[in-house]
Image (cartoon, rainbow, N blue to C red; front, side, top):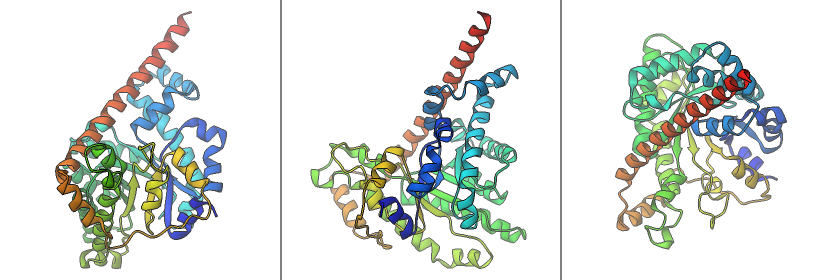
Length: 364
């Protein structure tokens, strides 16, 4: 049995952390669904920047946007929604089969809005109005300013993927924003069944401390943080406040493992995928990691311990090595937000460049 099928059968959803028009046109995404148990997909500005920059498949759509005098951002949104609509249709059977638990695709609001609550809420509502598919999650960063936008979006009935979470504290804050939105819907007599996932970034922790801690701690920080966060999630799911909303028809906010591609060339390419096997979670993985998983047969996989296992002992060792995980979590979130801004700016510049080249070609 492929490791991808094994993880699926254990109760974990595998989502692809990539989207390109070529993946759709070539049938590769459909093959991943059929053969590698992929049941969803995530995207971000970096992914779309790479996709549009390295493919000619978008040129006709860019030309059409240019003819309509659309802004670069509007052109991008057209391109992204076209890709994600096609992907959403491919995942619709999974969405229907699981009654909306699985089968989702994700689109991020402009990262320029990560620290602007009001503009984030406006952008989320505008995108939601344009989407004509039920299985599209809109990504909002779990920054301090993003939390009110998450609550408002959930209250408005908009499915949300909370992104850029790096610690159990950040996760709990995002989960409580989701909970407040659901509670407000219940109090207002609205349907509380609004789906959300919370994305914890894992491998970036190990990149941040690489070469700065004893060898025995190499590539162990991300998994320890994930263990602590998984325990926090399980504790929340069983709390009276959350049990009350389930009784009213709501569902738990699923935990999603993000940034799970192995960055250390000396480590196993499936290091995080194997360590993060947990039921009722999602692992969104790059293509290379997906293929590495699919090539593994008959692996022995153990569930993550509900109580976090030895995560706290490992984190004590990191503290003794001089790692302040709370400060590092804030740093990683800020760096992640800045990284997406850089990718967004490169994406806009890339579209501008393609538009300019097309206009020059028309003059010839």
